[in-house]
Image (cartoon, rainbow, N blue to C red; front, side, top):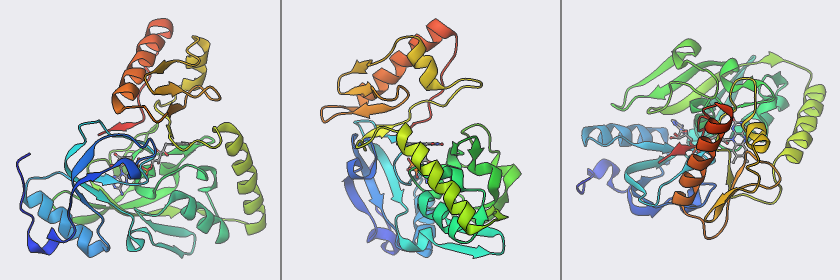
Length: 295
Ligand SMILES: Cc1cc2nc3c(=O)[nH]c(=O)nc-3n(C[C@H](O)[C@H](O)[C@H](O)COP(=O)(O)OP(=O)(O)OC[C@H]3O[C@@H](n4cnc5c(N)ncnc54)[C@H](O)[C@@H]3O)c2cc1C
């Protein structure tokens, strides 16, 4: 991409050749040519509108827990939604509305504190509301799409509109919300007893902590569980325990989890993912789909 001159209305927001390493869980990969953290909704809308006019398709960064950035980085604009204004929460009756940048864990605890049930199984999934909606995040058999009544999106040309659940097309770890900016979403929940709900949430938290490797933050879940099986089971069954490529390997504690060490590169991760997919396809006939978004 040839160098772009941003107009005064957004020029102060743009950082050049910004490393994405601190922003992604795997902590590897190249820089973003242009990077911005708008501090308000108005700034975000203006930035997207300007980018559209300049022919740049922005990418949105949520919590970075489902992203693998190539060594070559992103030759474009990455927008991070960390500003408080982009993560606000409000409750009205049995509905909770959350900004796209809100941390999913805050949304879950806020709902439980308000005596609203429906989101608690998602406790412990890292990342933001926007990231969860794009990938229809799920846990314990419950996906975020099943409680989403509407989503407020900012289209690439800067138009804001609400779409209903059907238009978002939630399916198994998928939606059609990618490529737009999720500004907020409204969840339809069930009134419930706060004490009972809190207890249920705490139990789920304990179970979840036992499942994921402790003390590691440079990890990712590379694969979507296929119908009627788990990626973890398939991988273990064909003896891929401990498989590694350079500094990337599968966690010895939990086979479906990708772990990287200090020497790892994004290339190592991509090669490892491809080797696992090939082996699983060859030995089981299952074509594992990747969950991780590759930038
Ligand atoms: C330890 C661990 C455990 C996990 N457990 C689960 C689990 O139980 N269930 C599960 O489903 N997933 C799980 N994941 C995967 C991951 O946490 C989820 O996919 C999460 O929802 C990603 O959210 P994020 O904000 O980090 O997205 P990011 O990684 O920042 O982005 C992912 C994608 O969403 C897009 N995006 C993010 N925000 C927005 C927005 N506001 N508007 C438009 N697009 C946006 C990005 O552009 C990108 O394409 C786990 C990951 C880890 C590391």
